[in-house]
Image 1: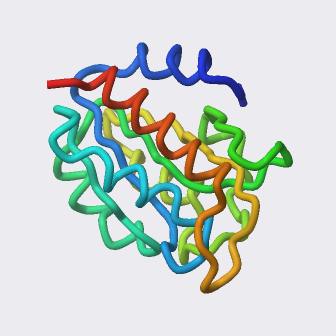
Image 2 (image 1 turned 180 degrees about the vertical axis):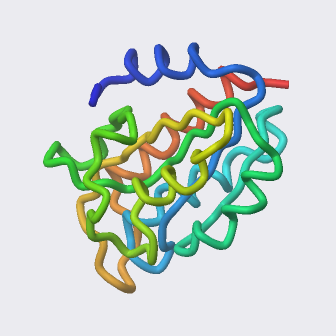
Image 3 (image 1 turned 30 degrees about the horizontal axis):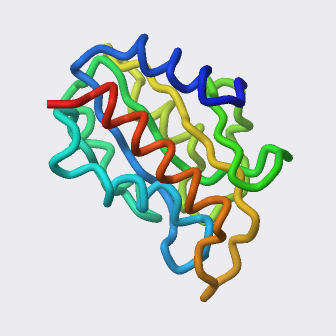
Length: 159
């Protein structure tokens, strides 16, 4: 795990143009909506393909496998014990496959299923949530982090 904007830029520089960006999370649970919030900021800003998978990324497994991207970037709120709004780049094997989340399928298992038998490599961009309670708005720290991630993606995958 690497936790600064330089590490994020370094990760993005390793991603080929054939990259798929997938946002995961619940917009009804405050900061858990970080992934979908990033996806909402990207249309018209990036040449990369973008999927807002919400809380059911398993519904997109076959669609992603059919596209067969070289790289998949998953953006999700992940509690890794840092200050709220901290952005970290993870390799999927750094996450516990049975991590509890608001998603039916953990991010690690999602990656394992999508990438099995394909050329796709995956990386996770995690945003440290302040809170993920039902009915709460996104915190100011995570709102700023969402903008930083979207700006970094737009800079790397600009048309």
